[in-house]
Length: 292
Image (cartoon, rainbow, N blue to C red; front, side, top):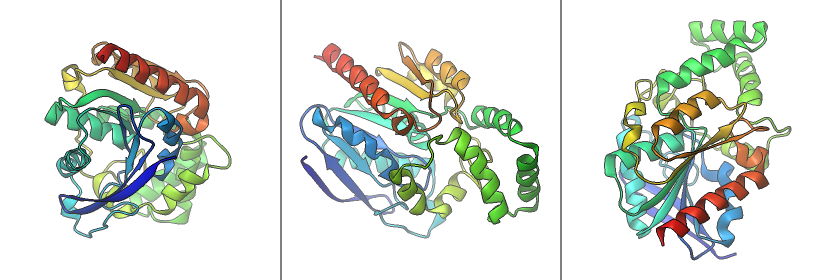
């Protein structure tokens, strides 16, 4: 299948990108984290038989530059980075997909730019409010075994979040609400192996359910009515972004669709890959027919 890659100048450095497939209206994929890489989104190459699929590693991640200046890790700079990618690749019409932080970034980008070239928005496991997300996560943590909760509380109070015991306790949450496959797919393992904790901890914090970074006050929920493009809100039944929150986001975005994958958590494109891709193709085909 046709593919090419390269580097793009963005605010703060250069980022790596890869395009797979050709033709159609391109789908630009935004990975989560912040601080992870595009690797875990590789299942989206399944869609490249109908359209070009574009991946990139956000600044600080993967094959992109990894500057040490933590002042670069702001929502505004990541939004400007996304616009720089769109401009450099000449995307006059495009769909955007974001998972987790990637969907948060997509929402902020749309609200800041209202890009006329955007055809549709697809989000999976993405909150619209850090506060709401953390409230949901608190309930999920409360369902963990008591000994796991004790380890988490003790280490967070002491600030010992790099301790192997804390990491092991957090992994119990991840196995329930991040990805329920055993073993995890290689693409996810690669993304975690290349993970940049400096970006994650500056923007978010020590774990998915504890936010101490610059995103702790992020909230666009009350602005979701400004989203005007066709939108599908997706997630798993066991997602760390709970289905009730996804339902609220769906209701707040006019004429949006909601898809909950019953046997998945935060990564349904791995956990129910074929069904997920079929549903995405159905959505994109419908949007493109109506746009003709």
